[in-house]
Amino acid sequence: MMPYFKFDYFGFDFSLVVAFIIGIGFGFALERGGFGNARILAAQFYFYNMRVLKVMFTAIVTAMLGLFYFSWIGWLDLSLVYIGDTYILPQIIGGLILGIGFVIGGYCPGTSFVSASAGRTDGIIFILGIIFGVFVFGEMFPLLEEFYNSTNMGRVTLPDFLGLSHGMVVFLVVAMALGAFAAAEWGEKVLSKKSGRGVE
Image 1: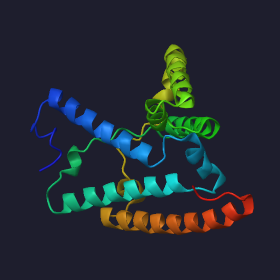
Image 2: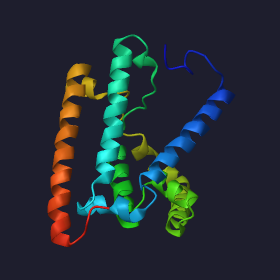
Image 3: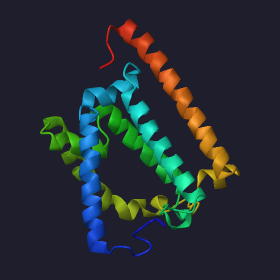
Image 4: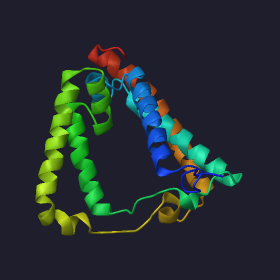
């Protein structure tokens, strides 16, 4: 029965070791997939290399199907899987700010550490920008605290929000992923020809 940590199959110290190993593996996979390269990451915003969409959507669908079927056969208690509260307006604004930074710098926070670990200067500079941004946000937090804690919707999942069963949401997300994959393949072929760029 999972999640293992919530059922006390191992303690906090060992959980840090597990997290470290998973983190190293995840970072290695990202680097091998080209996600430590800002040009590949930024290419998705110009629609001529949709590797990021395809890889991340594949990861989302794989995790979703795993959680759904493990829960269905009784190996996983979904009620013990951590889901943070939804603060809809602050999270939308935060997502937009992160997205703008992603477009400008070519990295999200995770991929910037992958890039820096590979010795890329732009990744290191991006991390310094993240640290500076965290410092500024911390100093401004008393002014932003009310907005930061506003529009709290509690622990919300897509099935709850849409009023659909878990199985139907899984089906819809898989269908959306297949449509996105097909559109990405078509867009890469068309736009790479127009721009004279090949898909890396």
